[in-house]
Length: 85
Image 1 (spheres, helix red, strand yellow):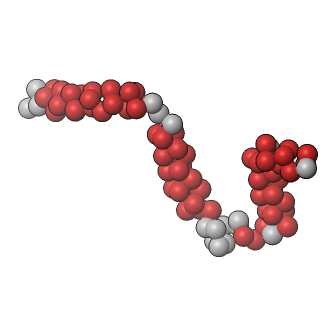
Image 2 (cartoon, helix red, strand yellow):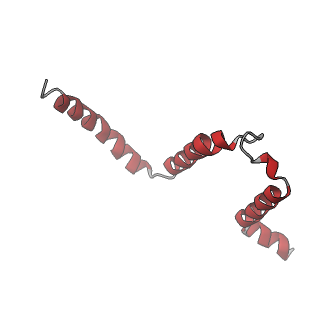
């Protein structure tokens, strides 16, 4: 029973070990042009997922204050952009 408790506690490390073992046994899955298409998944989907997860972890007070500031900055940018025309 201790092994099961330890695996539940260290689930992330167990997942990493399984992923590395799977990549060692069948490397053709992750090769360029393979079924996972790493040229697309790593470039776009992984980066988007990282930013999405970061956004989910923001405090709502911080996100609200940033949303209120952005229209002001956008309007001032448009106003200053027309000064030299």
